[in-house]
Image 1 (tube, rainbow, N blue to C red):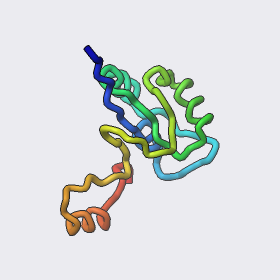
Image 2 (cartoon, rainbow, N blue to C red):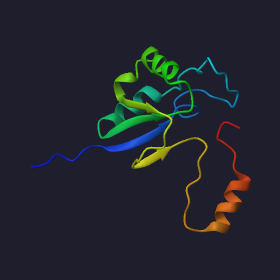
Image 3 (cartoon, one colour):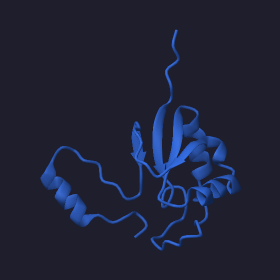
Length: 113
């Protein structure tokens, strides 16, 4: 009998796991969001979690270790890998309707704005 591998979740770092507010600093990652630890802990039981970020990989890994959430993460990448779901604070879900999509694009604001 073959074990089914866990489905992969690709989770953005800035604005999802940390308190990013739109001001990017190359050598500083904002503090971890309240609830992020528990969120990752719960998800890691059923899913493989990969962090998707354009930030420096070494800095990101150090941040994950510092916040004691590295144990929930299988990989840090800047490549949009094949995944079951992508979780990002700057994303729009395409529902098949291009006209609606244009309106969503024009009206888009991240939750923290």
